[in-house]
Image 1 (cartoon, helix red, strand yellow):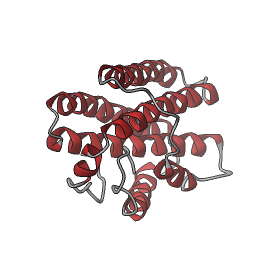
Image 2: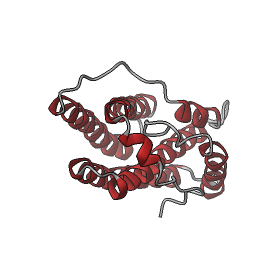
Image 3: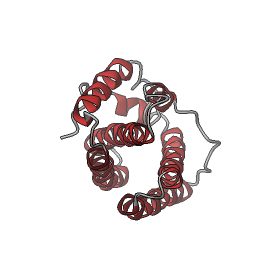
Image 4: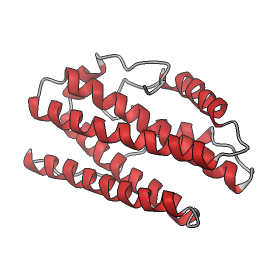
Length: 193
């Protein structure tokens, strides 16, 4: 469904389990960045009423996810650490087309967003199927479903608003690019790391 070229090695979960505090802190900040990304899409594209309406709901969901992760951190007697840099997302950002029309910029930002959601969804699936902690397994299964929906929404809006742009070819190029960088990741106890 997601079209990702490379799957996450399930052994990544062993790394995650070695430092649950780190994965939860990183995950919380990923959710905060997702909120910021969605709000940026709304702020820069207010004339797309249907998209704005749907994205308001996604922004609320992402903020709820941040709260859920923060509550999980607190329930374990931990404290939310400082924000983490997400090198994977920063590398994806470099692939976005620069200097095109407003429409092509919107489409690429939506594809960028879809890619992050797709990989997050895939990572959450791997966690839900392989982590030994049953609370975290259920937690990540529930979030996986939400991320899949967000991926579908972003990709759908890219296709809807991308008339005159070969969105499917651009999406295939995103998948190829993502496959070229993801090989560097999956070695740290972070969602994308």
